[in-house]
Amino acid sequence: PQQLQQVRLKDLCLLHLYRLKILHFYSFYQNHEIPKEILIDDSFDNNLLESLLNVNVIKPQKGQKKELINMCHLNAKLNLEREIDAFVQNEKRTIDAHENLRKTLNLPTLNRIELFDNPNLFGSYCVSGMVVFKNGKPCKNEYRKFKINTVKGANDVGSMKEVLERRIKRYLKKYQTILFLCQVTKTKQMKKH
Image (cartoon, rainbow, N blue to C red; front, side, top):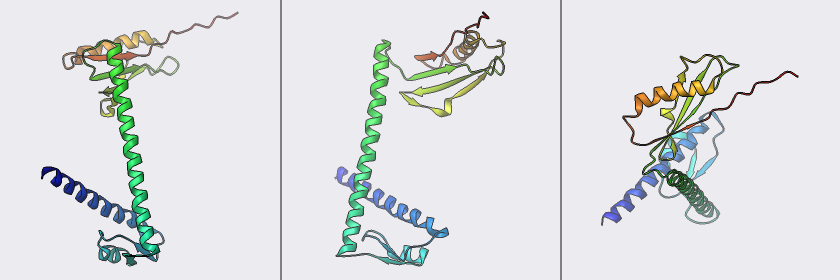
């Protein structure tokens, strides 16, 4: 019984989404040419579309127009299945990569990864950027930019030291395990020959 209720609820949600999608799609035509007729299936109220768009709405029961409706349903189902498969594959790839990194680093847990980089413009306007991943997924609302206060000029190591010290002091109490990944480049001096 509970599974049956879940299936019915899922079907009702899909039906509601279907109706909203049709209404949204045809509301686009308010500023464009409206088709002469719209074909819909039995699950949709044609009076609603007719009143909104002032167009002939048909619910075909047989023939070529019914075949078009069936083909649309099949295409929509195939597209949805393709999108779901792509989403599942992406999730699996993310989870697997995250788990492989945790195992490689021999960590008991790895819930949070923070990555830092220190860009500057010819030694001035030094800042540091931080991106955050939670359980292998970007957490953009936690991205941060740090103003470098104590380091002058293009000093990646000094800038990284300042930012990590600030970060660790403030947040180490919150998290059990944090992986910090930093990009520090060695500055090369050009010699005149």
